[in-house]
Image 1 (cartoon, rainbow, N blue to C red):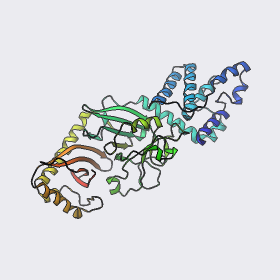
Image 2: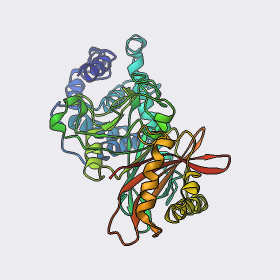
Image 3: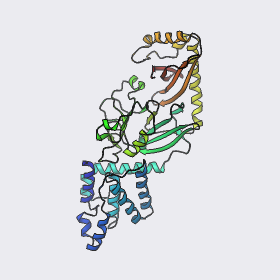
Length: 418
């Protein structure tokens, strides 16, 4: 509530709301009476579809760009009436009111004294505005997908990719014809930015993650809004690199805020409540991958095929060695610093030997196979599959993390997840 109140106060003190003394002093009494009709009526936010509120804001920007300020003002008035907690909309509305009496220099064109006292807030709102407009102008190429999604199984019904440089989350459906972009949303990340390393560093992690649960909003404080979807930070790659921390969620906003500044969280990814509700009602727990990147690389699905085939050949070789019962050859696919839930490779070897003995030379099928690639200082593949021995009806669901060393793919983590 403090943030919303501060914005209203800043706008009013700067003469950007119809009730401001500076506004009234420059208008005749009859004109002032007419203009008071522009005051926002503060009421509970209306029920709204995901993305609708942002679309209304962008339509106001379009009208301003076409010099249709009267229509833009009417739309802005309606928007702040419906969502008085949408601070950016309040700022645009105030500017439109002020533009009736003087030219505007910039978004949030307030007098210098007010601008100084609210400098951080104005900077955050201007950045939010810029990022929303940028997302409208710089759409992903039609049919393109993030390069990390090499192969998803039918069990991965949906996928999420986050471009932190654009403050944008992209929601995909995994169809028979490939990934289909369903929607995209403005998001907020950590106050200190990205690349989380340690507990309390106020940064959002980068990497390939999975949604682990769906927290009932009734069990949460109002601060988390419509709910929360935790992800599995730190993942095995994070743990290998010594990263610490926990409690990284996708969650909503408190009742006093429609959206938060681009960098405003303790490390979580935060969305407007209608947008989060759409995601919660769409994605599946445990099987939905979440890629969080500094900047997404959009490619055609065909462009991933060469990388997919190259890695698939290595995976087939690992499976064949295991089915053949050749423990020495199987161990050749693991890194010396392998860790399986805290066990070293030597400690993990008896479990591998036991699995090989159970197969007794029968072929091993990898069902519902998916793999996602993460490339930064190293090249990593996150692989999930059901391991089923021929003749068996089912088998454990496993996840492996592979790293490319000297041109060869090696496993540095392996574990049963279901």
